Length: 330
Image (tube, rainbow, N blue to C red; front, side):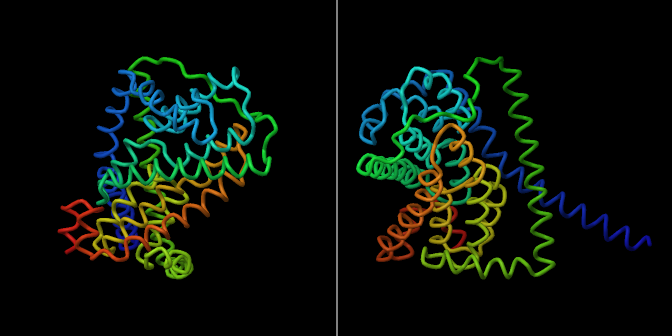
């Protein structure tokens, strides 16, 4: 009986140690960038970015004032953007198409300081990933807006079934408490994922899932080794799955191309359940928020794979991969 207890104790300890190490690596990225985000917000970075985005919003068929919503989402997070949306929505006559396009660009490009920091920690250069996410958001938004206008789709009034609370100022202590609570929940999620992965591996279910995943990601320049990495971000999101993402990317089992392509795919389509439902709740259509986003994400990454296929591995790494990461693999 004592031997069984010892094995059980060591099993629990190993899971806690592994989860703690992964969480620490993630928090080393998240905490300073979260503080930086708060500083940027305090000094008016959201309003400055919103003014710069007004011509872009017009290009994709949206009112310039909605640039403030997207700016808040990019610098803070989706909930920050939705709280701003709650303040501007009552004074605007928005169609379902407008809210769908707004939701789409927010889903593709949000929480950029933190999520780009996680991508950097996993080994990808920040500027290419930033350009990919913002550029893809604008392009997807333009395409969906064009289709809605051309075929008179979703032209009825957009009516939220859930109204987010309007943004209010909170003291620094409340903010610190809120962030600390979020970090604790993230640790619990990472611990749950580590336990789940261990169970799936012991039951050989992971091997089966990996084979199925490979069928979908192989055209995107990824092998089975990148499958779990892509699916983690696709379902959970980059922030919640960040610990696993960094761990897999630093494992040495992925090539530089797999790291970049998998992080690019999850950059365009991640948190596919929770985030999509949030945007649907404020009046967006699932065909644009979910189906168009996922399909266009795969198309865009496939184009990037084809467009970079002529590059040598060395040149590809120099353009898209952090030098330290590349040297570790080579």
